Image 1: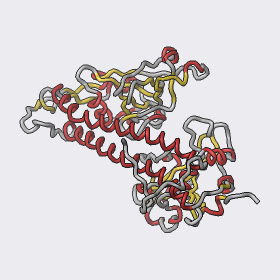
Image 2 (image 1 turned 90 degrees about the vertical axis):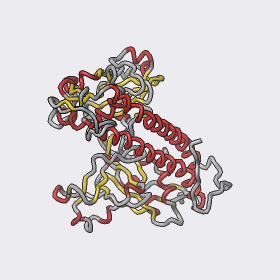
Image 3 (image 1 turned 60 degrees about the vertical axis):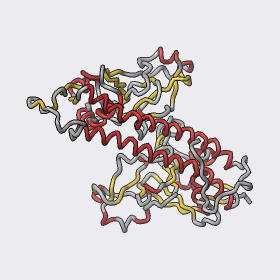
Image 4 (image 1 turned 180 degrees about the vertical axis):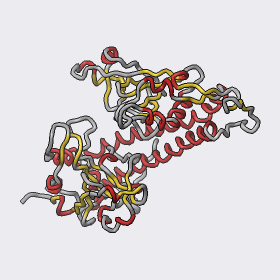
Length: 427
């Protein structure tokens, strides 16, 4: 007799729902799609909603805290940033969302046998990922993982008290990461709100006594220019992927897949060598260069956290003369909708250099730009520090994860507080 439990013996499997077009609405109950799945979180920019009158019918698809959702359809696991088999644990902010088709929710049946938080970490291990992806079916670039292939996974779980210890150790890292993310959001919201207050609502310092140019409708000293007049627009390129000597070097290589939900992109999936940089059309762009995606998902914007090269699906933007990068970043964010609306192609899927030549840009006085920069610089610098801490915390957690799961670390002797939660610090 084989040891351990099959997943369908210890977990309920709840398939994602499938709704017709007329059951959707502009608000009410949010729907989580596979396209929202990221490696450790969710991208909630493009969320659909189910009409409230259908909620009773689809209540079974509602997600609970610490549910594990698995993408059963997506890009092949051999591809970079593959999505098929991606597992994400439901955090508090996703509770109550409805799960859409092409994904399945796994929820433990008996918390005396399998702890839900422990199970969420188990699903991130290589042994689980490899098992379900080996059962995937489909073409070269797309695959489907049958539900039966997930149900048949068998595992010998440790004692329930040790499961909870392992979950507490790993979740301590995730709790600190989440806390840092909230702090980052507050810092970046303050920077954005300050920009809007000063340069959109025109309540900048000294606005009460400012003189206005009636001809252009702006305070005196301000100008209406084109984006191309106040920034350098630079392109990227990719070294030959078949040349190994061009890759896996020390230079970060930014692509649209590296876009972060925060202001900074903090680490890239690919790196190139100095030789690779010399063999492509990209330059080495310095820290705080503004990257904007120009193809596919148009208008995603990040600041470079360090010197980086960039592929041809983006543009690198550097302000001219007195246009500081933080001011440029917030300005571009403010007009990103305009970038999207003028992007060429039937679904606005491309930005070209000429786009920057006719889009308007509001240029305040140099002194006001400098004052804004002085105010927001500490906010961005603290945000980057927190992002760097999060990257290090994730690396530490990912080193611990397989060791804890494989029993290489003795958790019997580890003391867990009565509330079941460990605490770690950024020190």
